[in-house]
Image (cartoon, helix red, strand yellow):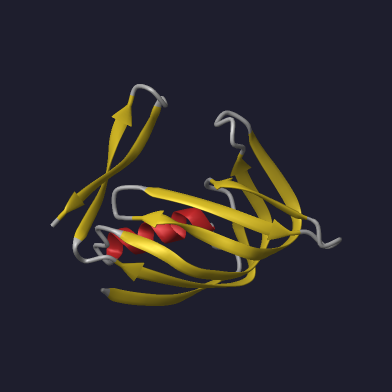
Length: 131
């Protein structure tokens, strides 16, 4: 296993930056083991898979997890609002880092995470290959 730690700064798109990081570091299969920080804007898709909601307010990242690779990302995020209520969903492009995001990714060197279209779900789903 190989570990990566990175700090993202103000203005970075969290989703895009994670994807670029995976490509630059040739991560074939990884998991987000820690992600803390704050956002000034968040975009998330709901469990129904169709509706994307945008929040523009100070948001604290209380949970960030998912499978990542240079081919695909599947990340869920939970965020605390100023009143300490929590919202969450499937993270998409458009999550803007406010002050910082401290991110730790663990690479699983025995696997490759790819994608394959699944007709039953209508999505590109995780394809796991043992190296």
